[in-house]
Every structure is written in structure tokens, then in C-alpha cells.
Image 1 (tube, rainbow, N blue to C red):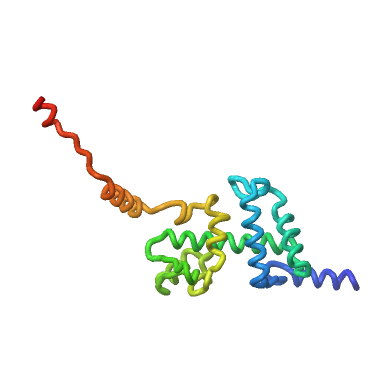
Image 2: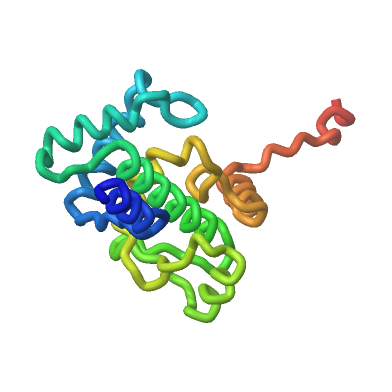
Length: 183
């Protein structure tokens, strides 16, 4: 009978059935330590993080929040994937015309109709409208080297405007053949 009960319990588990809800404090600690590891060449490489970094995060988080029960797999792994996807979706929107960022409120600025149209083809952006994204700057520092974002690249129009501004700042130095001919 115990075997059938254990089997029954296992069937209640699965994708989304045993969900863990993170507190704001847990998220803040995770992102703080993820940022710390991203600055350490022992844990960060060009393509992302080195093997074992999630176990290190588990150790660091449990040192600060000893009774949280967070494990590298599945908790931390899942939450890092969540934050990475949301950051990438936000960074992609911000590199697109029509989307803006309120740095003070840490919120996306765009018309609701534009956002709704975007979400139809970019499912990972769901839930980002009208909600402060307080960890954006820290996540940008962690992932900006790995992904092209508005901080690391500029649009064609921005590049032309920058060139125009640079030209306006520099005095023109035009050489003339007239002087050579007079001598």
C-alpha cells in the first residue's frame, strides 16, 4: 500500500504542480549573489557561468537565509532562467523603437496597445507591462556582455545622429589648392 501511495504522490508532481513562490527578499539575495559571481573570473566566463555556480549560489543564499529551503536544482536554476528570460525580453523591447525606460520608476514605457501587439509574437515579454522591474540594472551588468542590449549596441539611426553631433563639434579643416598655386 505504501508503494501505491508513493506512486500517487509522485503523479501529483510535475511541471507547475509543485511551484515555489519566491519572496522579494529571496529574489534580491539571489540577484545580489549572482551579480557577485558574475564579477568573479573564477565563476564567470565569456559564454556565461562556469560549472558549479548554482551550488555556490545555494551555499551563499542559505548562509544569509538559512531556513529558506532553496536548492540549486530545481529552485535556483528555475529562478535564474526566469530572470534571464525577463531581462532578455525587456532588453529586446528597449532596443526597439516605441519602447522606453523610466529609470526612476524602473518601469517600461510604452502604449498598452503597442505592448499587447508585441506580446503576441514575443511570449516571454508577458507580464512586463506596468510592473516595476527593479533588478534590470543589476541583470544588465550580469548579462549585457552575453547578450546584445541597448546598452551595448545602438541603432543605425542613433549611430548617424552620433556621427552628426561629432562632426558639429569638430572644426572643419579644409585644405585649399589655391595657396599652392599662388606660390
